Amino acid sequence: MTTVPRPPQSVSSSAQAAPGATPSVPNPAKDRLRAGGVVLGMNVRLVRSGDIALIAKTTGHDFLFIDVQHSLYTVETIGHIAQVALGVGITPMVRVRSCDDPQTSVLLDNGVTGIVFPDVGSAAEAQRAVDRCRFPPVGRRSVGGGYPMFEYRPTAVADAVPALDNAVLTVCMIETRDGLEHVEEIAAVDGVDVIHVGSNDLLAALGLPGAFGCPEHLAALDRVLAAAHAHGKVAGVGGDRNLARQVEFIRKGMRFVTTNSEIAFILAEGARVTGALREALGDKGAT
Image (tube, rainbow, N blue to C red; front, side, top):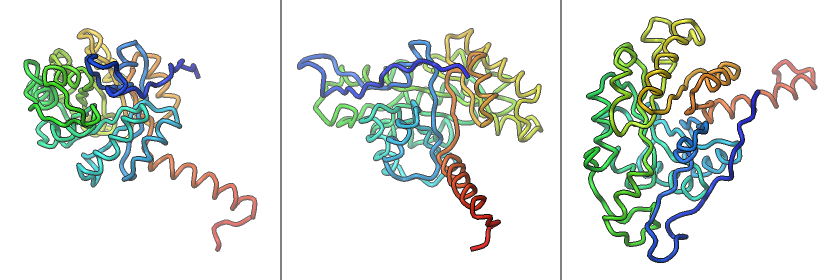
């Protein structure tokens, strides 16, 4: 497996800037993508503590993919996790429920620096996603105040808005036949940063649930890659947890990749340890 060099992650914040300097908001994952690198994310569905950001950092991840679409998170809990992530140099991203999720703005106002929009099926839906997370003139995000990204320091709106806008990572997921059919138009929408294939849902939509790596799956990935490259966007993929295929996807050009969930990591290590102990004891499961 080819090892991708990983530059040191910055934990700098606007508080460390020189007096009078223009404030900035850190987004290590977006910075790495801008530099042409690959970013790896951990799906988060179970943990309710900011400690998951520390674990993500220790395990070599670049971002958290907090899944609100399929999990029971409150915005307050997400805010706490996001603020820990900001402090340790991990990008806190949230998959919201749709391109019309009204919580998108409040998440971005309280520490989240990336939004993943599921089931994007048209350019119009992609534009609605951009509208929710980018400020005018690109989007329609409302201007707030007292942002934790600036450590609650008073920051002029003229400085805060471009800094926040520059830091947001906007991801549109391709998970349906409509999304795949219109991926070229979706990728052309200004303000979209990443076109991300949700392999599980896309394969189900194609009538091939769980058929990871089949010709139709690979053809869909190739189409998304081509569309993303044609419009200067980053291509991404998730859902397929086979390590060998993940490596091949990266080699083909996928640069935004979710590895696995914290649930899967816990189960895998727990099963490995108890399995080894049971085997050493000659115990087939009896207590």
